[in-house]
Amino acid sequence: MMEIKLESNVFPRLRDGVRAKWAPVFFTPISGSYERFVVGVAAVGANGFHLEIANQLDRLKCFYGQDAVTAISAIQIAGEYLEADLAKRAMEALTDPDPAVTGVGFGDLREAEGRNLEAIAQSWMAALSSLYDAQDLSLKVAHDLSGQSVVSGEGSGDRLPFMVCDYVKNHREGFANYFSVDLRDGKQRRMKGSSHKVIIDFSGSKLVANFGTLKAGSLTGSVNLIKRRLWDLKVERDREPNGSFSRKHEMILQRPAKDDPQVTEKQQANLDEAFEALEHQADQEELRLRALGSVQLIGEHILAAEAA
Image (tube, rainbow, N blue to C red; front, side, top):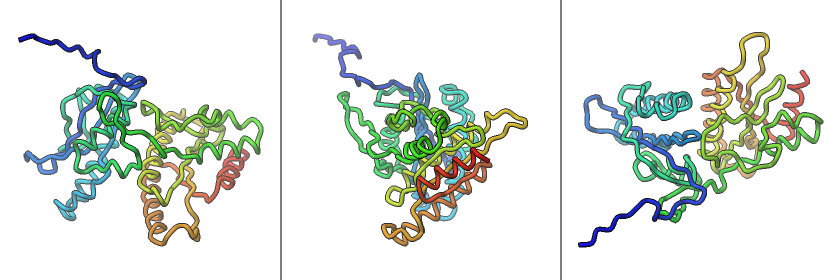
């Protein structure tokens, strides 16, 4: 029998893809039990990381009823801690883990290739976890030449930061340099990048701010994006030097008005609930969450804050 040896380089590869190592994040709700859930996937590459956490944790209520609240809280705490640990230790956070919550563990590291780290983590979560819904991301799943499922960011961008940047630039000369380079240059939204980097939309002399839209039609996706921008603000705030120099750090949202005819009563109730949850998270991090109704109001707030 002829022996055929295949090398990895004979298989098709992504033209602009990235290679990474990834590992599933497990949660064991009952100590000593063999029962466990895949609650996340962490992907680490040469230029960064991405942590994808289960977005349908409410399904645990089917198993544990009211006791699921404790489990859900533990998973969320573990995810926040792991994201901070990945930012600090990168791959070592997976090879030498230090979980914040009992019952959290990691699977074996494996290699993968995808369009970016986010796509790798999301595609494996969709394949491995019953507590995850890929459709909830409002993303499109595609297949590249290697046959691997990848996720593209179609429709996931937020135009608000670009519009705020344009408004402020048109009303105050010299303020353009306070905005991030991609906003000034009108580049594609940064969330399509291959790594999780701290992103700050506006960094002025008195105000540091990120911008986000609370969308009634895609509430889950917009909330997840805003949470990420809050995290970036926290990291940036913690970098501030101690002393007399202290800037305000705000997450500024645009949300539909209470009397918006295109938003139903149910959607308004969901928006209120989402805003309260985001406000609670901002309070925990000692950040300011501000909701304004238009690009003009946001722009005027920035100009007034810098002039104060």
